[in-house]
Figure (cartoon, one colour):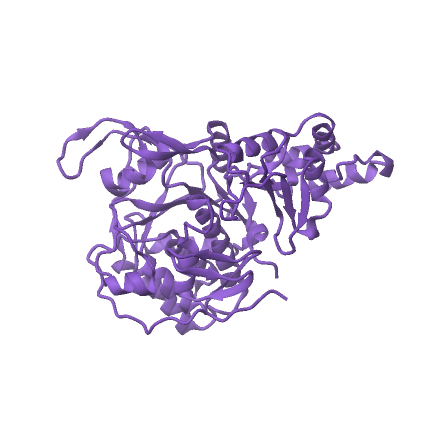
Length: 510
């Protein structure tokens, strides 16, 4: 049984005056409203009662240069980093939100509902992404500003919600239909209204900056504890990339809780949750009551099993630019493949593609023909790379080489925890439940040490040591031969996007 821990004990509730501009936000409050509305149409009366009081912003512009309508419904969900109206004591002692605020987006996610209503896609956009910012009018001076390169999170400060939307559209080719700007206090209240949400981790997580302190195993978090979980940036060397992955895992858990539990069966509780969330967000002017109700109807059958999560593939996480400092560069080919798949409405994980044909073909292969590497194609083996040697750029090199060998890497390598101790041997960390898949990975990295980690889940970890050697020769050929065993399996792998994970894969084991 996983370790169970009661919700963290919090100070007595603090009454906050409502900020005049509710801009300080996180991704989760907006996505919480999605999950809440998805579970029941019983919130319709509540929507009719408070929908007119929603803060609205003119975020979606027109113009011939906008991407074409692809039939899906796509939201840009942003959290802004302003703390107006929140007492300093609450920021410091309850929410562990120190530091200075900025007029920028702290977190950005693209949430798309497929045209057939059967699937959702969540794409996390790193806030330091170095992208093209369109020409715009400075809201303070009224002067025209030419198009230029800059961090995606700065577009909001330069031109508000409209420029943030235009920047995302221009760089992704996706048409944004609706805009949601969230207040992170709503996140705390909503998680508490749901009775808390469970999260799981194979190793303890500690971040003195955010106040996060989780043991290994499964823990039920209350609102303030959950906020620390999704905000933590100093758990290891992964910084924002690790934080985005935890946000995705939390959203999958939240969706699982909202759609399978009884947390929202109580009409009074549902009313309270909806009232809290909807009164704490800003939305575009086109998202009226009718659209919210239609949105709820489209989401009611959604679950973690038909939701895909991914972060934009990256080529470099510390690209220095004069005037901007450290920025993040997208992997151009990987990002293009991702957004093309989203635009086309394809599942990012390739789930189900050709499964029946693959099974039939596999059954036709004699046992003696099975390759030494195992029976699982590299494209179905998901890998997170950790730099354990402390060598600059090693993580990205290993990620790229494993991806070239056919493995489904996350595209977001990070530093391995360990207090600065350099690793010599490369280590493959794996959950024994996936003992067949690990054979394929081990065949490509024959010098690596295998380390079983029960509860790690479906994503393997390759901790690259200073003696790491790229997949080559017979090992790489053996891995490739698995992928080539059936045309259907190869087709399924090809349809997947590097680093994408289904909600089931990142949810806690039931």
